[in-house]
Image (tube, rainbow, N blue to C red):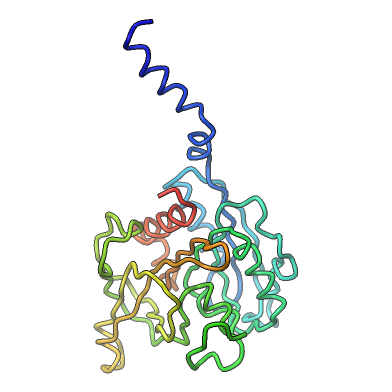
Length: 267
């Protein structure tokens, strides 16, 4: 056999290996959305199109958009009561806003796939969802009202008026931030960081033109990663993009796409 044929055969075998096939299989992503305060119909479209433009991915949705007269902060998401809602998916993106949903059973169901090992990405109001007890004060690890915050990685209790956020890289060199060029967003909400749970910062944000002068020097994490639950599942979260214009920004969609890839172990 000619010597030059050996590397070719080796490459061919590698390309046919199960590991190679798995690495090139499109990711299966489930986007959970709905609730108060945001145009979720628009966000679903922006996220799906943005992800498909940046990676090989199959996107599915589960959502509930409250009807007039319903309590929008308690959207009747069909994942409640269904702990297997994420079976078969590689990553779940939580983009819901369920600020007043405090049912322990609902939280149990939402967290079940992630405690079982399915990675997650949390966007914006997901950090202000599933709050119970005295959530405006720092919660303690292991407390009943800390369960959702332990999953997202940060307890945030609120934000100020919308104002441009100046973004910067956190110390270190997280792979999600590779290639990121700092910029200033349009009008957006800067979520506070009340308590953190062993997170690794990715991006920091400050609002130099905040309405309240006392807020102009406050720097908060706006993107981070951590490992959650008994399976040490990967979770990427960002509080950015209240408005559609910010979510449509290619730089934001690049960040979310890299967060999805990192969570899935594909980055």
